[in-house]
Amino acid sequence: MDRDDKILVKECLAGNNSSFEAIVEKYYKIIYRFSLKILHDSDDAEEITQIVFIKAYENLSSYNSKYKFFSWLYRIAVNESLNLSKKRSYTEKINEGLSSIDENPDEIYDHLELGEKIQDALMELDILYRLPVVLKHFMDYSYKELSYLLGVPEKTVKSRLFTGRQLLKDILIKNKVFQIDT
Amino acid sequence: MIHKKYIALINKEIDGIISTAEKNNLDEHLLKNPDAKNYYNEIILTNNYLSFLPDQEPSENLKKKIINSINFNKYSPKIKNKNLWNLLAASKFKLASTFAAGVIAGIIVFALFFDNNNVNLKNVSGTVIASDTGVKTIREIPIKFPIGNIELKQLGNNIRLNVSSNTDQNFKMMIKYPGNIEFNNIKPGFDGNIEISKSKSFLQVSSSRVRQYSLLFIKSNSDYSEMQIKIITSDETVYEHNVTIR
Image 1 (cartoon, helix red, strand yellow):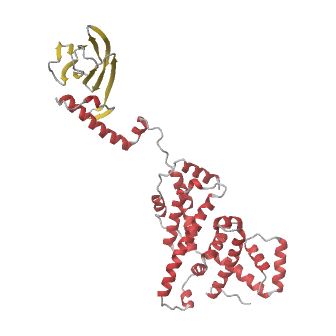
Image 2 (cartoon, rainbow over the protein chains, first blue to last red):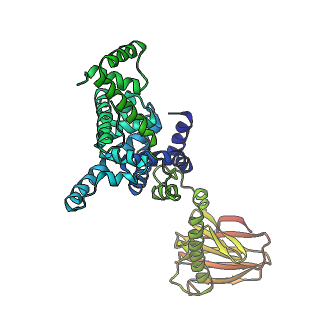
Image 3 (cartoon, rainbow over the protein chains, first blue to last red):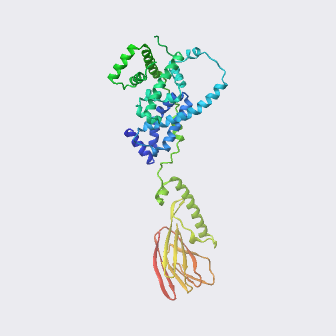
């Protein structure tokens, strides 16, 4: 936790609401972008971002300053993303049963930009693997920090991260996003 | 099939934590194993492709939505010392207190100017009231003496003396006052048990078996004035004091 965050949290706990507004100002875009990469839906990402800060404020007194404040926010974001993802996957399964559209993958991906193709591939990845892949790549957290964020042992972090990368590679190949000539 | 050991080394390289010895070991293995080399290239490319994920900005009002959705009362300092000043400091309370004081003042003025015996001013007290000309103070001066007490209340130019005695003996009260003060009325009114004699600057009230009554005076200006109060019972002076009226 950097000094600025430490002061802001302390001031907020002393009743200075503008200090929490400063925290929101500092981190809401980062949390939004992370949520969007994990959920690939702007409404869901905004919802998660809102929930993260509401919960952070409500539980600020229980925040343990031995962890980075930003990591604590991320941890809330991870948990909320998992919760929302569970709800969404239930809905998606119902929708899949109703859907009769049969599109050719080549046609789908022809008009998509590379970034969107990567995002779609990422969404095919189970969220348990998606989370460490995104957190490691974009935030460069250590395995130990990922262990705290994801609430699992380091061994599990490594296993999920390595498996996630491998699965993502397979999805990208399956979706013909890239093909390496051997 | 790639050995787990080399999968771990490839991931360590991606994560930038591979040692020189491990890197040499990995490179050596990749040279000898085309499948492993192919796997390595695909994983590295996959990881590089993640950088193509677009970074989108949230909607303009997201921050406002977040701030508005937080109930900011949780850590607000509680009012520990609820003294009058703290309460007055709150503007909402000022408005409420002005209204409440206005109501109290209304009751007092009503009681002062209308001969309604049902209104017991002894139980009415207050601090400040708002008026068209500003703020006026209701002063309360308690006067105690061995056989009773007098409660002097001042609301602007209206002065009221609530007199209580705890004796059945003859109770005589003499009040001297300057020219800017004029006796106006007595409550609960004249009856056979109360005798009043007065001049322009003097009032004498004699009572027997009447334990409570109120005297009303009106002050014609805001000059400081002095009232001299003397109480005599059984021909003995039990209380004598001067009270300054603002």
